[in-house]
Amino acid sequence: MRGAPDIREVQDHLFDRLAQGQLLLLVGAGASRWAGLPSWREAVVALARDLVPVLRERLPDAPARFSPPGPDDPVALETLLRVPEAHRALCGEARLVERLAGLFDTSRIDPAALPLHRLLVRLAAFVPALYTTNFDDLLERTFAWAGRACQVVAAADDLQRWRLDPAGGRFVSRFPVYKLHGTLDRPATLVVSETDFQRRASLAANAIDLRFCSDAVGRELLLVGYGFNDPNLRWIWTKLRDLEVLPVAWFLELGTSTDLDLATFELDRIARVDLRASDPVHPPELLAFLGALADRCEAALGPFPR
Image (cartoon, rainbow, N blue to C red; front, side, top):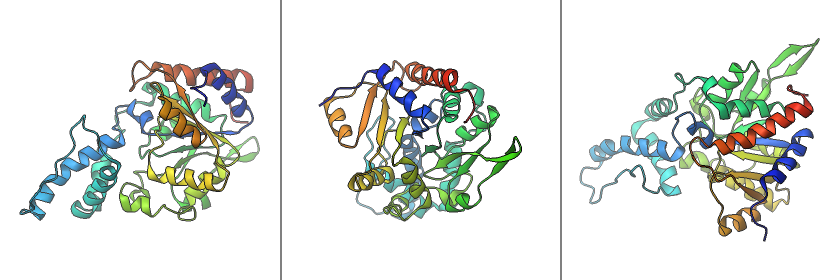
């Protein structure tokens, strides 16, 4: 069993993958926490607090009462899925969307103050696509801030309406930002509850999942701010493993991996890279890792998409 890989060796390997256009970026909620947005756990805790008065009114004689998790309480996966399900059913779809929009509001966030997102946009010049499970629009706002056009792909229709821009006498497609779990701009695309995840339990159930599989097979993935715990991606990963086309992935661990972490992730061809970050919300070690990679790509390959 191998231990955590050497960071410099990982950077060398990822540079080679980037130079060949064989690396995808997968961005999770950890990236948006840098900007002060909640993690999915924190968002569910907020939704759980909304539920309490509705539950008390609906079931006044219930023998036991649901209590929202506290800020530091562990939250089981079942709760992370069931609370949004109950919120949608009891409070209504409009209230759920309104609450999520408030929790993930980015209107007062300046992309210039987001060093992690700026690095992701720089690295996007060397990858065929960027995937994210985040609902918020921080990535696309940072692309706009950097003067780079991108296209959000959150539903099957987006794949039929690709946006092209004129460049040098020809047309070039915009860089795709795939929203695996939808976007707040289009509430119908959101994947937030148990039923939403269950409906994705088939490779043929969603066009964005199919596109992810198509892009991932034969390439490698770099996971940034992503814990690889949500049922949708875990299910896809299992199917790709069963089909014997599982890609290699690199997981940027902010802390230190245990032997159990290393062993179980290795079964899924995921290498954990221990950054031992001093600050888990604003980790300078993560910026240094990605910044060195972006600097090297721009110096050797040029600053623009090839």
